[in-house]
Length: 337
Image (cartoon, rainbow, N blue to C red; front, side, top):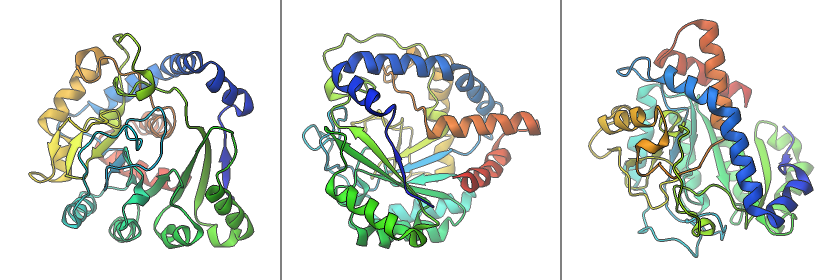
């Protein structure tokens, strides 16, 4: 399939982020909260219908190394702001997780990305190969800043992923040389990549985005305010740190939360652990009920909302819910991507 290039709102959006960063950020977040509030609440109620038999996660985020090589101003994982102790997932833990996802019948989205650059893990191709062999029906996607990506690496990993997302972080709205190299090669060899969806996103490296639960480096001077909207992340995403802990989400940038530990339980058990249940009940009516989430204004307006809307549409059509529906919908998501 042809390579896709995205630049949100084009030149107008780019200039708005540069010239009026807080206004652009707050306007976007307010619009997203307003437009998605109804679907979020509906999905949470759908998810909590049967507390003993909750749906699968829609996305499993498996961070195999907790480092990044970029300098994005909005992210605490950037190479100048990093404070986490270095961690790299053991081969044994990785295989345990993938094997247990397979035993569980998981068919949703899988990515080896959290707050990191996946290509910093020198095993990354082999890890994707193992995941693809064990989880043939999963939609596996890689999100990368592209700084370590070249044509050879792209050709190595291509057989094991459904989608490649290259975030072209820059200040001038131009493709970096490595990104341009990939674009040129793919466009010159379309048949070689006919089964891989490649999306290149133009991203402003100094953008002001969400506050990431108060940790975003370029939003440190704001007075915290209580966010009463709810959040989808504990209902849609499983976040796994390199040492096997299940954390809240990507906004736990310092990886201090722990809802379960995969050293002590299976993936399926961890997903419905007592701490996970407690968090979901807290956030059911708003973020103000949890100290980590109370001031966080993060909202995912892309993959999660698309997936949630598809689930709700199919749920209304089928008048059913729970684990079986989630499994069937995973097949739908894979076919649509």
